[in-house]
Length: 379
Ligand SMILES: *Cc1c(COP(=O)(O)O)cnc(C)c1O
Image (cartoon, rainbow, N blue to C red; front, side):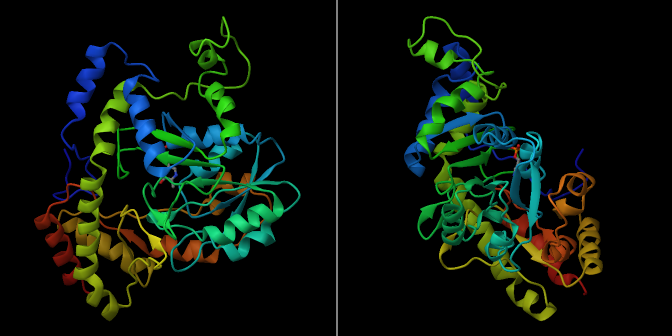
């Protein structure tokens, strides 16, 4: 039983999910790489204009594939924000890499591109920007640093599917990018993800890595007469049942995104004046970024006020949550970090940030009661 009248997140069905799953079952192909997997991959390739998209079991696994594809090995360093989900970093640490933690910009909360070059060493193998809240990182600066130092960029685009930077989709800048279809993201199949391959040279090996290190893909294409173990790998292929669910959601992308845009704008309109009066900061979206409407957050003046607002909303049956606990200060972050990194903005923001209930099916009434409860809160 959910004790909250208004939860933080609720998965939203758009209608065709069950029909497509039933169709997959009746079609007799429910393992990976079936008709619905191909439909999802094709839709994303066409819409985003990327060379290849491979559906995976999660964004975490797509990040693990990226680390394998870049041959990340012990002693290598990877530049990552401290203000992110653990998988952004863990996927590389699994290969033995040491994270160099970069702080974030106080406005968009994306990694601060002006700090990148100070962190680059001869061992740096990758930069992993996270498009926080689906607002793009400063990709012009990041890509020119990447080109100058010949360091790969892997975009963690878990929040940012269909967001744009200067008109171009996020996820199309780095050699590789990753998407999440976890229940908490804009488009979902429960658990799922995708690897976006912008460098076609990485495709053949990606197909092997996600299929247990075998060349089964070439066997299916009739290029070899038996398949065998040729590389490292794991089981990263998503089931066609999940792909069927996801395809319904991706087909309804306009409906989903416009509902989320409306929710985001309603929060903004309802809270703008209150925020101004109470020294609370609302999200910043630069004019050259089209966001993906993934979340709505508040930056309260202090940790105490944030905790008090969480309690105030809880008393009214509303669940609001915070994240991320700075990774550079976590046990694993301290143990694996490539050097000591100060990330003062990350530490400050992580104490003051609060995410409001935000999901595609949030009703006007529900949202009105969240806003009303916030306006009643005495700072
Ligand atoms: C959700 C999320 C992930 C992990 O996604 P999964 O599909 O659950 O593995 C990675 N990075 C960021 C920034 C996320 O928000």
